[in-house]
Image (tube, rainbow, N blue to C red; front, side):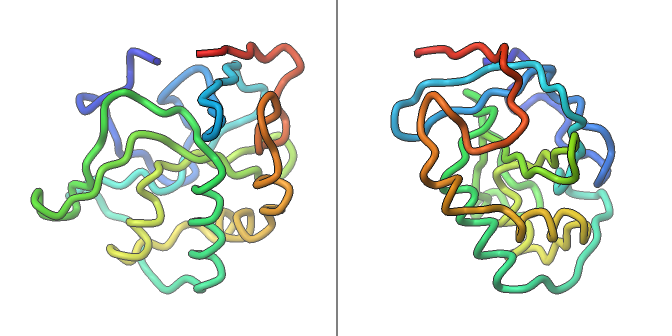
Amino acid sequence: MDAACGDDVEVFYEDLSEYTYQDEDAFGDRESFYELWYRPEYIRLNVGWLEAGKPYSTGPVSTAFVEKLQAVQQVQWMNVCLGVHECDLCSEAEAPEGNGEIRIPGEVGVAYAAPFLLAHYITVHGYRPPQVFIDAVLAVDLDAWAATRWPDVPFPWVPENAKRLLE
């Protein structure tokens, strides 16, 4: 696990700013718990890293988008950390927790990096991600992703030299 994971790190990033939270990406297989670690060769752009007191865009999104995003979260296990982050937009008693991320491929060489709480931010707090991200989620071939199992991962552009770790 990366030393940067946990409650004491910055969680707010402007939408579409460059992702700098961790140097490496780690995809985990939800069935085997094996992991694939690598230094990305693609640009990662932030989406949905919200924090209380910071402005964020709001507005409606389609049900199809929300359902597809939630389905992606069921098949992708990304950069899971030991610590958790609670939604600080909710009251402490009701705040859900997240401890990982998702990656959504964009145009060639670009991936969107979002916190696992993203669907919560959208459905509960009215957050509206950038349209380019919405379009990218809707373009995911969910059947192909759901069928992908270790040692492959449900994401394109993983470098050939990626290190496969059996944990």
